[in-house]
Image (cartoon, rainbow, N blue to C red):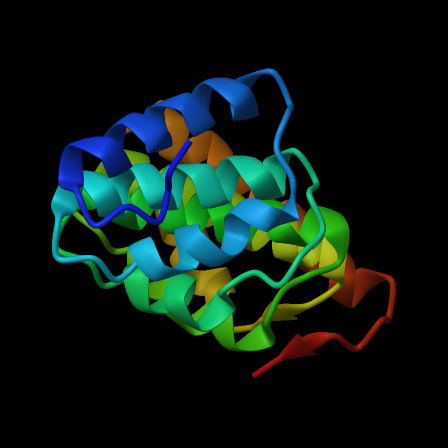
Length: 179
């Protein structure tokens, strides 16, 4: 599998093979470096596949040097699927105690996205960061409360779940809710 190939078709085929491996929880940290380079590719299909693979590596709890800053930058990508994959990855990383407080405000911005899938995934990611990393931001609370009236049931449930985790931070007196 040649993830570093300059040939588009070879690279896309390698990404497809990697996706299949990751679905059965195979894969290791050696894939992170070539995937990191692909996250800023001009080629949309490469960026979509690479961002999904990074999220899946995180979900599979593969330890490594994740490109947190690149993932945060992808939250502004023009392609909704790339944004959704990036926020999913940022929500999976806290399962390994990897995450950045600086990712919360960019994720908050996605709570206002036109896509229900992105709003719901952003809410879920905020809940995971609160639950697994013990950090949250008070700026998330009014946005999540508003989403509890979202037309999408998925968004409503994700917001409710996230809000409960963020509010739990203040009720246990952890002091990890920042303004």
